[in-house]
Length: 431
Image (cartoon, rainbow, N blue to C red; front, side):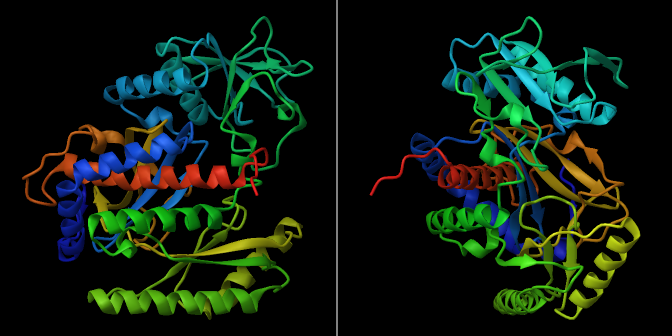
């Protein structure tokens, strides 16, 4: 089933869908050549927004949770992709250690860990779950709502290796985004594969770097397709060292919000779009400390400052200055059961393995849906994103819509590959 898309705005997207379908062999060859030169992230998920006149990623997660939202029909693809990914990294791998977030009491999150364990077990690996949570001092079994259970075991650190009791893994898979920084127990591991690499963690990664890389690959794909790259690329600006509680850096923020809104208005006028432009203001490191705020006018920033100040006073904290990303807001015109929805595309290695819709009945079309109260509807990706149906009228075919989402998702994954190469602290630098 294709979610309802407001029909008045489907023209440009249908045209883009047609162009993508017509160019499918060229697109697949282009991706194939890129993956010969660049290593895809081990796994990733991409939040995509479909405005009807624009289709663009708004966030790329290199430590995706939510694997439990994939339907059983999607598992074979995930297992095959896991086999391919492991084969490239450590063909003789026997043991895999998964290190989750420190949410030992969150059964919703741990259901995702159980799904990852299932995928890699079916890919031919012995899998154990090793926790770096100081509260886990012995093997702890947690029962899950679906009748399954996961056992969290305290990680044991040797001189150069990590493991759990009586288990020495070749590969360590992080499902922990390291937003609080890299704990010492994960540093200086030289004899095992650590995936994703530590510099992919939220504490060191910057979304502005990612979207700069995305802008580069979107321009190249746009040229290949013969379309304006803006149709698949969210514009952005960056402000360094902003402290909303103390009003520091507000001039930079206000100037960048104004400049970006002006650019978006120009594009809207070019395409005859009647919607009111907006931007999303969020932390550049992708953490959710300040939340993701919709801003339609630079004057709105005063209200944002006041809100942050009130929150800081009530919680008794003094947030540090941080870099801020000002990103073009992309409406979502998709609906699931009358609630606002956005697709989330899941990938492993270079393959799209599935996805779902994030749905939020309490949010508007111009708001962030990754918030308390959201739900997940996996039905939409029942049909494979790999089998589009050329010749079917644009906008009428679920596989075609999802193939288009998969192209944008893989483009964001390619951008993440460029980003990780550029930020690798161990990369060799040639003069």
